[in-house]
Image (cartoon, rainbow, N blue to C red; front, side):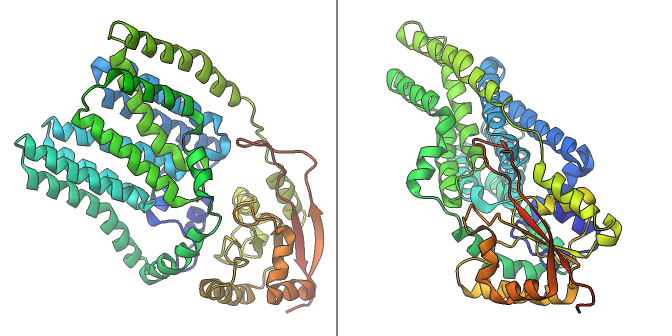
Amino acid sequence: MHYVVFLQKQGLIPYRDIVDINLPGTYLFEEVAMRSFGAGAFGWRLYDCFLLVSVLGSAMVLAGKRNLFAGIFSALIFVLVHLQDGIAQGGQRDLLMTALLLWAYVALFQVQRAKRAVWMALLYGLLIGATATIKPVLLPLGLVLLLALGWIAHRRGLRVWSLLSAGAIGIIIPVGAVLLWLKWIGAFQSFLSILTGLLPLHAQMGRKTLSFLLSHALSPVALLAALWLVLQVLERRKISAEKAELMIGIVGTAVAYIAQGKGYPYQRYPLLAILLVLIGMDLNRALDIKGAIGRFAMATCILSSFVFAPRYAWLTTTFSNTTPFQDALSERLLGLDSPTELSGHVQCLDTFGGCINSLYDLQIRQSTGFIYDCYLFSSESTERERYRTKFWNSYQLAKPRVVVETNQFCFGDARGFDKLATWPLLDEDIRQKYEMKSAWRSQVLQHWWSRREEPSEFKLYVRKPGVL
């Protein structure tokens, strides 16, 4: 995302010149974060911390002054879960969406408490609409909650149509704004083409089984969630409107996680956040109940505080903070020429192995706007052929001096360097017009998330002298 913002500053237009499946809101929030906290790695950590503080603040407001423990407890558990997921999850889009969703809940509850109801309904809609400009997966939940708000408002004698209209307008404003922006920069048709072609292809790739998704959805807090369910059975308490809405949120975010199908740790953050807020509120209330229920709630809090939390905290210290791939590639690129001379003359054949990261670190503009090779080597389809044709035309026009091929492909596919052989036209072009200058493979495993793994390898090709 940083690199896309960088390319925009170089004059490239998203979707028209830069072929990317991420939605426009992603770029907006990314640029705001880069301007606010800095465009480097340290700035991104600050942005990640800002999002976590935002989650903490929203959880405390949701819980209320009388339930301050609930907000702090749930938010800090969430923070530790995020940190133990590894540095690879830092500042992810779903973490931003989690913060927006929790503040949307704050606005929703304020409406139901008749506190500046219409304005809070508008704010609720704006926050839900903002998530839809990043990913559309939470929009169905937002609409269901808006309908629930109408039903509750009707029962409480509030202005139903005014609230629903304000909420709907709020949702429309961010979505409409990004569409107008696309029209203004001349990328509307290109965006629609990606939305109806490349994005469905992306959605089909790398999908996990339903059993995998279900087993990983709550894995960091599975035992805590099980204890919470036991507490529900012991209490048999009548469900309030706000608790029902949080439970709707649990279902809605679970559906969103499964719908994405990739099973990445950060994609479960909205689900974990809503669940933990509800767990914290229920535990806080149960602590005041005398007898077995109160003791059970106290035991759950002690277990969370002195077993779960320390384990999460320890895991945050186990990750490596080195970038061997980027360091090695940057060194070898600089051995060829200066970043200024290389800018516009380097092409990555990589998805997220680290080639684009290296170009960003060196502020080198890629020779084309095709920043993922994932779709070039996917299974045969009409969209793949369309993507190949567009890439080939751009690649032939650019005639890059340097091609960097990595063995990382898409979502963990094991084809490695063999991926190039699946497209004979490009394979033959590189064989005839380029010579391999160097190859790199790390001898040290990197540990950026739940497991240690080998960094991606790369081969660096340089265009042969005199070849047109």
